[in-house]
Length: 113
Image (cartoon, rainbow, N blue to C red; front, side, top):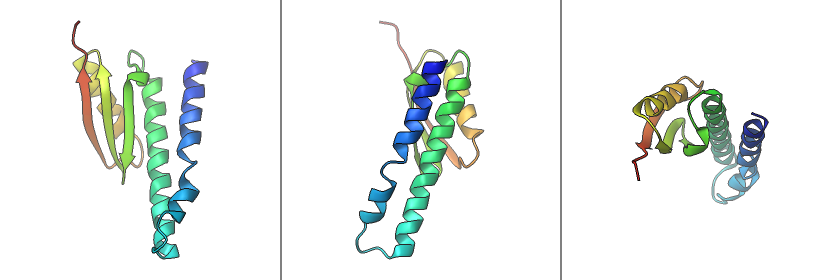
């Protein structure tokens, strides 16, 4: 459990690193537009972290197998899970996070080897 908490903390911490770079990446943008872009990026990074944390708290769901990306409040889940129930549960958990506007569930079921 401590490992999962450390991974979540690292994920949330790393997502904040590019914020300053984002503002500089649009030299033609006005200061207001750059601030809006930075805020949107920060909001998306926060949502991603919250969804990952919520997935980690779910028993019988391997959050390490689920990738989470967020763009403009739309969360995309991808990766592989063992059962249809896990696929559905991951989507339900993501939808329950504050700030999530939509969830695109691209999770796939693992197939037997």
